[in-house]
Image (tube, rainbow, N blue to C red; front, side, top):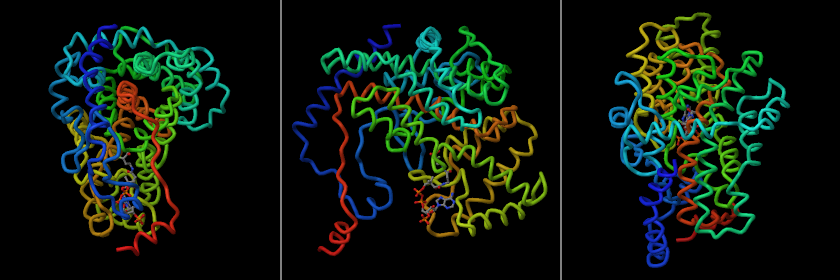
Amino acid sequence: MEYIKNRFYEKTSKCISEYQKLRKEHGDKVLTEVTIGQVLTGMKGIPALITDTSKLDANEGIRFRGFSIPELRKQLPRLNPEGEPLPEGLFYLMLVGEIPEEEDVINISKDWATRAHVPQHVFDVIDAMPKTARPMTQFSAAIVAMATESVFQKAYRSGIHKKYYWDFMYDDVMNLIARLPRIAAYIYRRVYFKDKHIEPDPRLDWAGNLAHMMGHDSDEVKRLMRLYMMIHADHEGGNVSAHTTHLVGSALSNPYYALGAGMLGLAGPLHGYANQDVINWIFEMLEDLNTNEPTKEQIEGYVQRTLQAGRVVPGYGHAVLRVTDPRFTAQKEFADKYIKEDKLVNIVNTLYEVVPPILGSVGKISNPWPNVDAYSGALLYHYGIKEHPFYTVLFGVSRSMGVLASLIMDRLYGLPIERPSSYPLEWFKEQANTK
Ligand code: FCX
C-alpha cells in the first residue's frame, strides 16, 4: 500500500518548507505572555507544541483535522450503514488531512492485517511476567520489547540522511499500530482466560479483529470497539500520552520506545487509568451503600464524601475542556441506541445529573463536566468486557493512532530535540517580586 505513504508525502511535504520559513523568518515573533500561574499549574494554555492531527477547543471538544466527532460519525466510511465508521479512516484523516474514500480505508485495513505478525519474543516477554502484573505494565513492556523490529533505528544507525527519517518512521508506525490489537488481546486472554488465545482473523477490520481476538464476536461489540477506537485516538498534543510520545521521539528514539513511554503516562490515574477508576469507584460506592440501585440522593451523598476524603471524582473534570466531552456524548448516544436497560449505565446517567452541580459548587474545579472516561467502562461492562484493569490498554491501542501519526510528521518536519528551561523555586519567587 505504498500509495498511502506517497499520498501523505504529496500532501504534507509542502509543510517542510513552511516550517523552515517560519523558523527562519518569524522566529522572533512573540506568541503570548507566560504567567507564573501557567507554569505552576501544569503549563496549561501555553502554545508550545506543533500537532496537526487534532485540536481541542475548550467549548466544543476535539476536532480531528477540523472535523468534530459527530461530523466524523456521519462522514467517515463504514462497513454497514447502521454501524460505526472504521478507525482506519480516522487514521487516514489524521495522517493525510482529508476524508478518505472507502477504498482507502479498506486498503489500510488490509495493510495492517499483513503487518500484524507479532514476533514470538514479544509474547515471551509478556509470559515472563506474573499474571498479576497490571495489564498496562505488560502492554508497555511488550511495545518496548518489539523495538527489535525498528526499521527506523536500523536505518539511523546505518547513517541515512535525516530527510528520509519520516519514511522509515512511517513503516515502523504502520507495523506497530497493526500489531497492537494482537498484543492487547493476548494480554487479555492470558490474564483473564487462562491463556486460551484466539487467532486473528485477517479478513476482519482492525477494531473488529481486536474484539474477535478478545473473544467478543457480536456485531454490537465490534461496533462499540470501532467507536471506542475512534474517539480515544487523539486529543491534540499536550496531553500526557501524546506529549510524552512526542518528547521521547524528539531524541530520535524509535517509535516503540516513544509509544512505550507514552503508554506509561497513559497508565496514570489522572489520565487513562481514570477509565478503570470510574468503575472501581462505582463499585466501591455500591458496596458502601449496600445496594445495586442507589437513589439520586444516595449518590449525591457518596460524591460529597469522596470530595471530603480529598479524592477526585473519576471521569469528571478536564485540563482544557469546559463542557461535556463530545466523546462522552458519543458513547451516551451509543448506549441510548443499543442498551435498553442496564444498572451500571443507569448509574452513569444519574452521575451525569448529580456530579456537575456538586463539583461546580466547590469553586476551584475548572470543569465540572464528564470526560471520555465517565462512560466507557459501563459500555464495556454491559457487553461482558468486565475486566476493568484492562480498560486502559484499550485506550492505549486507540491512542497509538494519533500519537504515532504525529510522530511521522515530527520527523518529516525535522523537529529538533525538545528542551524547555527549568528554574528553581527561588527564581520564580524573585520573578514574582520584580515589577
Ligand atoms: N474531582 C475532584 N476534584 C477535582 C476534579 C474532580 N473530578 N477535577 C479537578 N479537581 C480539583 C483538582 O484536583 C485541583 O485540586 P487542587 O487545587 O487541590 O490540587 C482543582 O480541582 C483544580 O483542578 P483543575 O484545574 O480543574 O483540573 P486540572 O487541569 O488540574 O486536572 C484532571 C484535570 C482531568 C486531571 C482533573 O479534572 C481530575 O483529576 N479528574 C478526575 C480524573 C479523570 O477523570 N481523569 C481523566 C481525564 C481525561 F479525560 C483523560 O486524560 O483521560
